[in-house]
Length: 325
Image 1 (cartoon, rainbow, N blue to C red):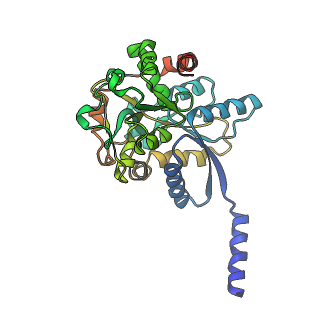
Image 2: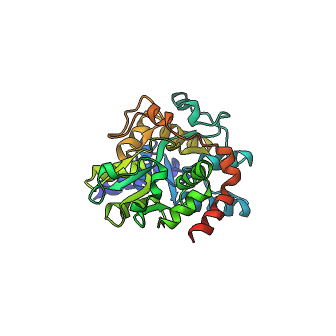
Image 3: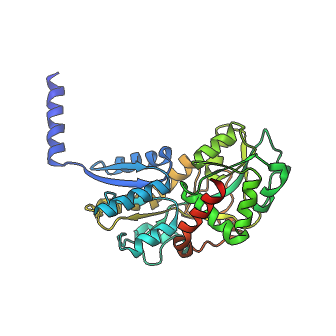
């Protein structure tokens, strides 16, 4: 007992002399994935404590806006889905310029040319289906196929008002096919739910035959035995590279840089692959099982104008609300 008390006193004394530095991360990365990253990072850097605030991209950006108006952004690091928002923050001088030494392993197309943010994970909004309800040969192969009457009232999607990735998908659909396409989808009974997680679960439990959802979520559910699979559209695949950046006003830049370095490192990328079935941004990290080669995805992907999305996102959200509410 005395030995335990002595050890406890020593531990308390050390924690007083060498207190942990707390850094705050605002993120839209699913809790199950970001927790794994956080724990691995803190094991590597036991003197740094990462405080995570997690929600959908729209709620994260709303929180930052409220804090901007209050005069202080409380986050040190931002890790969400939509690169266009980082362009906005960069223009407002709210991001710290930092080129991680790990970023040399990331293609230029997945990072800011001026070094303010870098991609961390590759995601695609794809067409997923319930294998108990739909045969593979009957699954839509392209976005226009979703308008067929045979899929009426059997498609679910996450709301672009909550999900940053689905906002990118909505933007691309408007640019490619016009608002008429979305109006027809609405007429065909497209159901909108809050998040990609909810859409994936609704698909897996058989409430819908088809989901417009993120690829990694379906791979993960499939690996766990759920009756789901996915199709990457034959053309105009929607590819998103989820950036990470440091808030300019951080009081702990060195610790924040260490976290960014870790996420972009081989170890950090492997966690995203192994725990989240995400496609890595680094070519020297093995792809998740069942994922296509990244170069193949890029070839058939729509080129998103992130600057234009930044400027038009509010109008797009408003028009979407008029159609689907």
